[in-house]
Length: 84
Ligand SMILES: [Zn+2]
Image 1 (cartoon, rainbow, N blue to C red):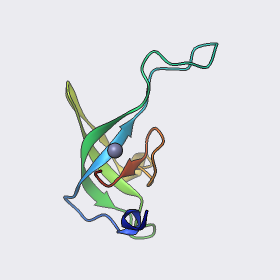
Image 2 (tube, rainbow, N blue to C red):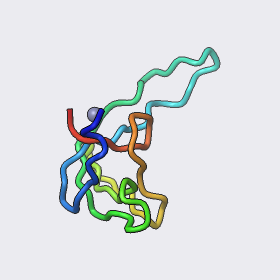
Image 3 (cartoon, rainbow, N blue to C red):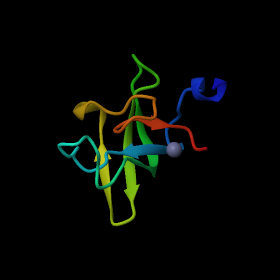
Image 4 (cartoon, rainbow, N blue to C red):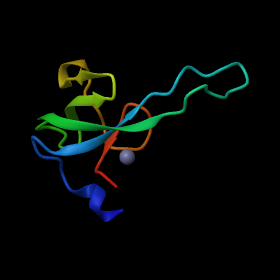
């Protein structure tokens, strides 16, 4: 999707893919990964699609700063993408 190439900016509202619950022995999950709203708090100048995020979960906020690895562009758990 061409829109995914747009670099994130500070303060953008994006989606963060929350990790689902741990895999069971049969490979299934009780809860699969799900999109959550998140605000871009940092953009890595060396890697403009790697960001720090403030993630707005329904029951609480958590931070994923660059110094803890940040979040890469994508649709897997732990990644961010533009709203859809
Ligand atoms: Zn999403």
